[in-house]
Length: 147
Image (tube, rainbow, N blue to C red; front, side):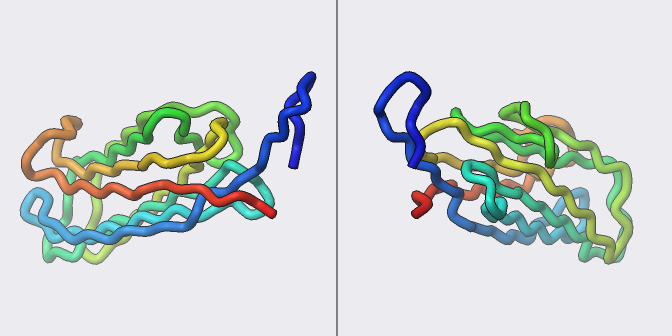
């Protein structure tokens, strides 16, 4: 247990609880499998690894689509090793050949006392998250106190 600087109020460290989600869907006439996972970062409280795998299970190449992620208040998405992040990330994927898997790995970072939020992922044919053809996943985020 730590103490806030200048106070006697204890601050407990916590870690993200591991969670995952898998979903199959159709994007631009291609069958797509998406796996998203959150796992606590070893030895670093309040930090987790967010890993996304997208596989093209179709007979056709998949061209020009978007992977977008956002998080709830108090959590940020960062590249691994970076201190500052944002609540929203978007990546354009130029091409995913048939049978190919692409993986993204980001970090989730929090500065709040505990977390009860979510990380949301959208795979979309356009940069608009509300396109009906979009494939959406949501992972609920929870924390557990370190002993």
